[in-house]
Image (cartoon, rainbow, N blue to C red; front, side, top):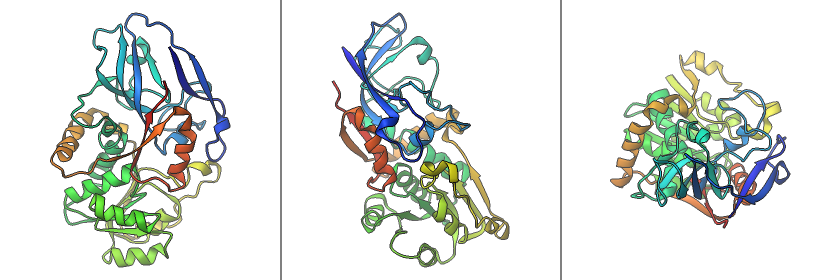
Length: 343
């Protein structure tokens, strides 16, 4: 049986290119004792993948040259020589951008993002474990509740609101009694934020001056700005903070392909004027609380209070670069998941 793997061969400059990776098709070796073979069914496509392949210091080690591209995934155990896992069980872990994951004893003992190979029940669709119950959900949950410390009645503004993190964050803020405004890149996405995800308003930053739109949508200012974008959007939002406002730095999609000349926040004096604060975080900071967070989010989903739909795209793992590019060009709505169709 052969495996199809996407391996990093160059540190990218700018946007990811197909030539930064190689498609490796090779035989899967027999399992040794305490090893597991997983057929990968769904793989998460995340903007952070761009930063995972950079060299230099970050919140997680860069993907080594020659190694399989990092990706969270859900799959089914097809063979096991490990006492804790049986064929037919559905699992969640950092499975990598590949058709099968041959998990050695060493790999099974080394959790990625606070998640070891975990058996999951299939009461919810498997892609949900990559979205609302995965990195996206944990980022939204802890970013809002622990870093942003949102309170009922506050105005929460979310950039990159139509993405995997943004759509979940907006819904959590609404469930906690906040007024929620999302910033996105098209009128169509603005409508979806309101109709499908329960936002109070959506702003298209390409439709006119964002500062004027924020004045209209948030006449009393912003209590919490949950930022996934950075750049000009962050600068503009800083000018609309209320006294005691909080800026939650979750990501900076506008800057990931511009790592050499990154644009920082020029309007930071607003933090002084408004006695506000700006704080970055990584969801793994709260890994010991994941179980509790997932239980609450799962309860919302089962009660019909949270829309956990994912944007599922079928195809081979060799579509990886194309799909990441869609995230940065604004073509995607919601959490993107690759449904793996490699043999």
